[in-house]
Length: 115
Image 1 (cartoon, rainbow, N blue to C red):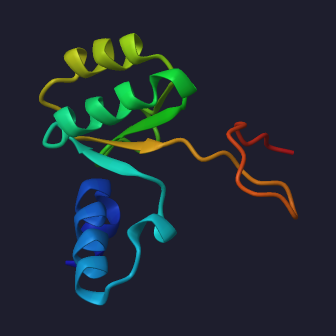
Image 2: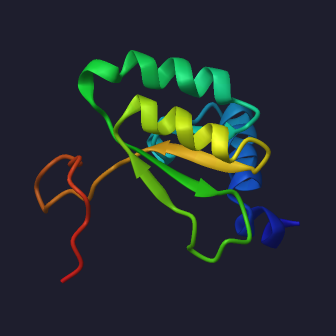
Image 3: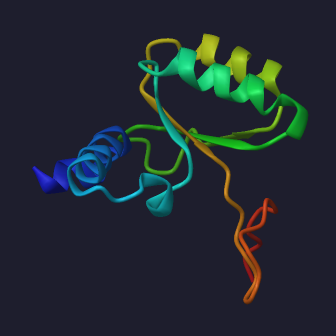
């Protein structure tokens, strides 16, 4: 059961939400703001629309079985909506994109650069 939850991002998200609900921990301390699609699509789109003026980035990944393929990063509301229409029935996880922080700094919105 645990292996299955770790292999599937949607099930992992659900398990983490259950854990934080039961323990009182803050989910936002464990991972960036995250939505399970298509189930939470309307909530996700409302959040993206709220952030429109900030031009925030969102990373979208297939929930399971993609072995690293199908990952997309968006900062444009229109592009996000087009992508969601294209993948209508496929399970995806959408998270606020959290860039890597440099030592001594807070998290950045800049993409991680491999050395």
